[in-house]
Image (cartoon, rainbow, N blue to C red; front, side):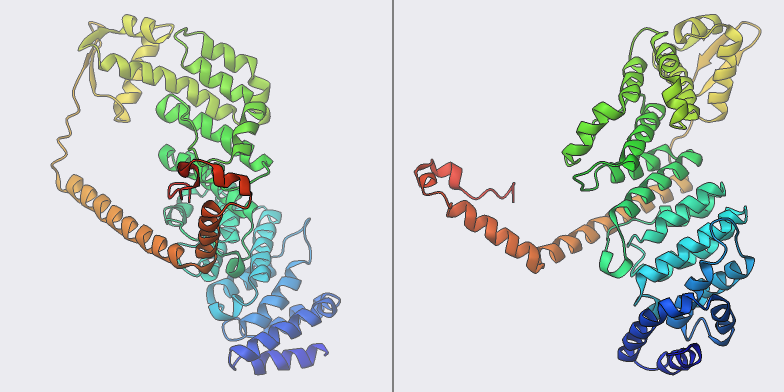
Length: 438
């Protein structure tokens, strides 16, 4: 089938039913090699297709066009066509070829980077992930590319809408999702939260990546743990133990691949003020190589803040020289600067008498009775109710899933009727069905 005939087939079959679209998909796959050899003609043929009505054919043609010029040069023409396509394409058609759609979205990011403007990919990729995801609660491979584009463009707030969406479902058959896509999304998403100074949200993303089921640990997982350790120290002053459902392979590799960060956490909790700076100096080369020196500096500054916050729980008034001595600062001026910044950030409540060199620590003036506080509390309660209902729904779906029921039945049968005859002599408790382990 030549190019002219394929164009005719695309226009004719795109307006028919689902069966014809599946047939069209097969024709496009068969013709793909031939189309690659006619890249110039394919670019011209795109002008004869409607991205909204003939989305499947437009997708294949545009993908071939996107291969031109990479990796050295980007194409404004391609980006313009892709941006228009991603905002107007037909959802039902593009979901027939999720792998091709994901590949196209990655071309968009690559072209934007090649043109020296990653922000050009942010809006199109947001459209793309919303088109591919069956529901807002699904994660797709495009989520990772979108988050990376926001990072490269330093456009952190543009990612907020996507990152704040609760992810509850992964359907590889519908989205072409792979394990590394999830790991990268959690890693990049956590980094964006760091850029927005939303440390609890960053930790949540990192934990999702670290606890994802796996038998083999890769570089993404190790890099995620390193960020997790640093952000934990910045946020809470300690590195919590990972959840029990963390894959054992992850726990093992952390001990061998992240020793510098384990040493840093140990030094942070030491009562000796000099231990933390010494640990930073000892592992500085590793931290710099990992690109984490900026976070390490925040860890050091964070311990000073935490020490000052502890003083507010013990003293009502204290001199600036005493504060400097107790938190490990060299001068009273440094202590004053830290306190002023913390007051401005709402991290402590205090008044400084500059003439006397004294600091008076105050109670939090917020009584949490304002309209905004009540509205925030109500919104949090409603979100909790919605999440509980969703979890009940998921539990019901899993309970009725044939694969789950079959596996549960097999385990129940195996527990009650062991294959090894000698086991029939075991105590009754050892043969009892364990609902906790099931």
